[in-house]
Image (tube, rainbow, N blue to C red; front, side, top):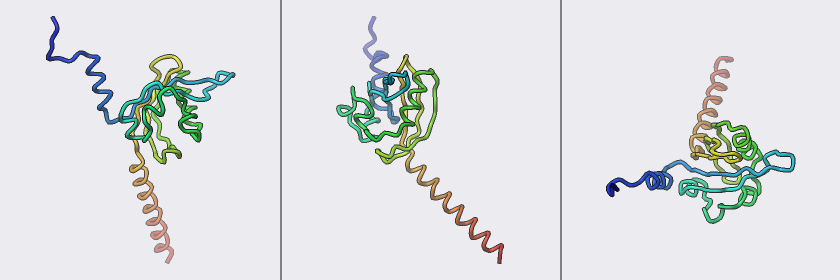
Length: 149
């Protein structure tokens, strides 16, 4: 008997994927001739990925990150490659100069040579931390100056 009041599990996962606030991307790692991560291809993204990065689905799916962002920092490819090849999960904070943003990223390996990425933009938090750190340093300088008088 089919229960029409309960959406099937696939539909619920699709709704979650479309409405979650975290960005999501599934990548396939591309290796060079020596078997080292050289690039990665966008296999899937969610709407939050588009909102957070400003990159549109039609502009990235099926393309490599080097095609989409030619100036991509190597640490993105290296980190994701390590996840995909070693099967480890990581949580990192990195800056993307091309997107002018800081990201907190959780990456894991759902299948061989693939990496799934969940991320949020933490640029405002990083800016706030920088302001607090500069104020703390200024306060310390002033305290030292007063103590030396």
